[in-house]
Length: 447
Ligand code: NDP
Image (tube, rainbow, N blue to C red; front, side, top):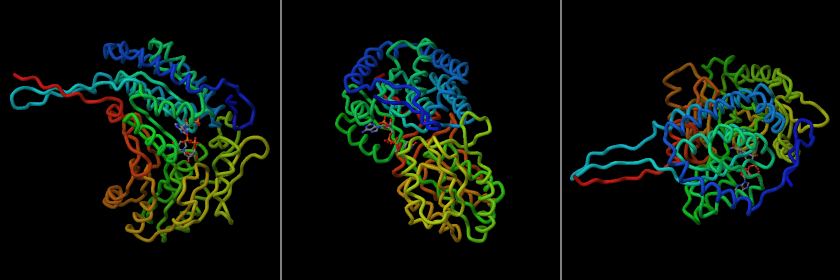
């Protein structure tokens, strides 16, 4: 039985019944039964229903933010911003329903039409770090394309997805179109991956589990979109606006207590600027407000679990450059930590998924690119420089799916998001996500 805990207090919020293979199968059957009617809903009506869901999310923003904050330990201000993005994502995909369509292609002897067809039942597997947000990134395009859905949130953080499922019904989206199943990944998730009636898996989580999803999906030649781990570089050249770069760097790695696949957890600094930048970075990091997630001023909450805190702690040996303050007592707290590292150290190679940043020195553009690319991952990253030509050169050379120049923000509803290398493949958000939830059918008409 999953016990859902508030990571800031270690108190039980609720105990839920655990679903297993039978419940997963029943959810797939419901989604399958709902598919033919849902795909036949007129695009303008489907858009209206998704837009109504977006409005309901806005109307329930405070409630959803509170649920997410309690369940994940997120600061309430950040949780509210995430809920606002969820509404924006549904608005975007409501608008996209009738703008993602086929083509007419001139060919010899006739005309060729393409249709965008929904896939059928799609399985959406979501992690615990951004439960509501990542659910919306998958649900929005899946519904817009006319698919029906079985959504499996992480057992640690199922509450916002369950509430969202109620809002889906309140919006008038028919029963069976969206089904949420709460159960262990290795049982319910695995079943969705192998189920013959599931056409696609949209997965976000660890690279290790992602590898298993890909293998499991091979049995039924299922489509997969994989959004996996990251070890992204925040590359600071000596000619950058150091004050601005240093002020932004803590957000890039300590937001969501570092439990963020986009975290720029390797901070690469060009040698001539190193001492000055580290001084500014320590100052900025020391100002991060860590504590009670219910407090409007709080910027960083606890980690998700005691077990995860142990993993994060194992990355810090020796004396860090900086270790911040964190509450004592109950809650899975861990302080903001900066460590000096080489790119070969474990802290620079593995995804910590906690508030620990590795600060690494480099000399010149070539070495910056070499170090930044020397990782199996390729999800996000940043480049800080006042030299526009260099910014574009380095942006082209970095092996990553998402990049920011003179900024650390990566995610917007209207722009594609996803990884290179072992950070996965397929794109979420933007119009590109619709390609991952539809197939192209080609019809030739002889004239
Ligand atoms: P997992 O990859 O284990 O979990 C992600 C989702 O997959 C959860 O819903 C989980 O369910 C489910 N799942 C687990 N096992 C299977 C399986 N065999 N088949 C199908 N689905 C499965 O990530 P964790 O939550 O354990 O986090 C571990 C590490 O992964 C983190 O420390 C971080 O490094 C990375 N990670 C990266 C994320 C990203 O955004 N890219 C997000 C989360 C984690 P359940 O948890 O209910 O068992």
